[in-house]
Image 1 (cartoon, rainbow, N blue to C red):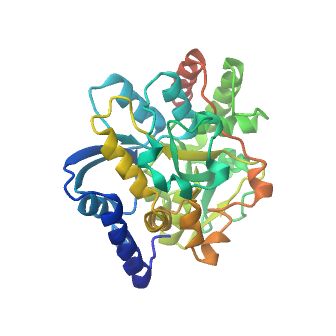
Image 2: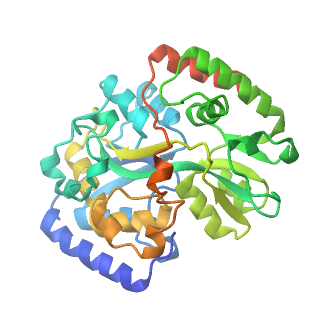
Length: 354
C-alpha cells in the first residue's frame, strides 16, 4: 500500500503547493504537537509523500510528532501528565470518553473547509453525534493475519487463536478492548457495550488462551509476522495489508463471526496551545492528495471521498481494506463504557495476562 508512482507524487505535490498559497499564510509562525498511532502517517519512504514535511513547508508551522500504541496509553498521557498536544487521533469509543470527560475542544469548521470531502456515512457518528469534536481520518476492521507456511489450512474464524495445534506461535492484542472483544465473540457476547459479567466470561476465555500464546503484542506484531516468527495474529486490517506487502507468506482472514469496525478521527485536546494551527493541520490532512497519500502508505480505508475517487480500482476492490457491505453489516463498533466497567476491564485484562 506504500507504492505511489512518480507521476501521482508530482501531481500531488503540485496540487498541495497550489493549495498552500490559497489556504495557508506563509507569514504564520508557530508549532503544534501531534500525537498519533505508530505507522499511521505517510513519511516519504518508498517514494510516498512526506506529509509532515509538506505541511511544515507550506504552512510554516513546526510539527512535533510522537506516537502511541493504544488508545489507553494515549488517554493516560493526556489525563495524568503535563504533556500538551494539539492534535490527537483516537478511536471511536475513546473519543466518546474524552467528550464525556470534557477533554476535547470544539473544532471551528470554518477553518476546516476540506471537511466537505468526508463521506456522508462518516459524518455525525454515534460517538460524536453533532460532529463538534472530531474529523474522520481512517476506518477499517479488525482481521486476522496468518503465515501460510506455518498454518496448513486457512482459518475461518477467531477460534484459530485458541487452536492447540499452533501453541507457542499465536499472538494476541496487548490492549484490553480488542482482546476482550474477541474473547466475548467466542462467548457469543456482543462487545459493543458490556457488563462486568461479560468481562468475567471474556477473562476466563483469555485465561484459557494464555498457555497457547507466544506473547501479547501491539506494534511488535510487524516484526513477528513479517519475520516469519509467529503463525497467527489478530490485528487492524490496514496494518495487515502492510505486513502482506512485506512478506509473501502472509495472508488474511475476515473472521466469519464478524469483527470490530472502527473509526479513528482527528481531535483537538481542550488544553491545546495552538488550536488554529491544529485546525490548519486537520484541514491539510483532508486535502484529497494528502489523504490519498496517507491511505496509500498506511493501508487503511479512507473516509475521504475526494481521496477515494483518486484511487485505482485494485485498491477500491481490496476486500481487506474496503470490506463488502454484507461483511460490515456483521461488524460491531465500540462505545464508551461507564468508568467502573472500564476500570474493571483493565484490571481483569491484567489478571488474564498474568
